[in-house]
Length: 164
Image 1 (cartoon, rainbow, N blue to C red):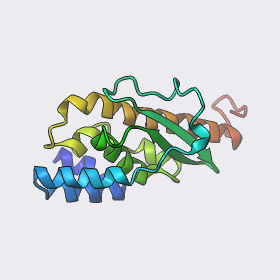
Image 2 (spheres, rainbow, N blue to C red):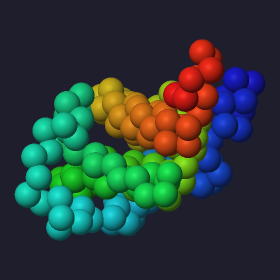
Image 3 (tube, rainbow, N blue to C red):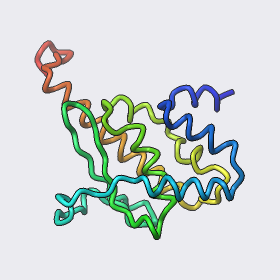
Image 4 (cartoon, helix red, strand yellow):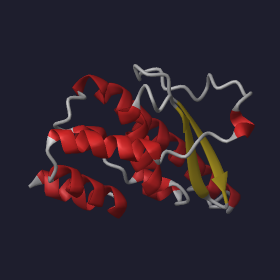
């Protein structure tokens, strides 16, 4: 029962979505993905003119930039992706961000490494898995960095007894 064990570590909102998707036929899943894609929060205008080369996900076949923000120790991610050309990518990000935005880094860090495969199972997106996994890994890396920075700000004492 490794699948059930892994499922227990998912954020509840993603688990609900996965349970819903498992009950659907392929055509229903595609329609649901289009609906989720429309829910992806638009990139704020303040990011329109910035150099986004550090935010691009090069492993993804589609141009995707994931831009993080941190407020009061909570993460918020935005994505720049062409929703009309890549509705499944936008849907994946919409579902992902709905679970981790406005949450502490620990929520993003709890995402299972096989989340993309589990979400996209049976909808014919096997060729996209590398890019989807790269998006999850980028989110987790950002969460790890923010968590470490928050620990430093709080004056966490290192193993040598010094602040750290």
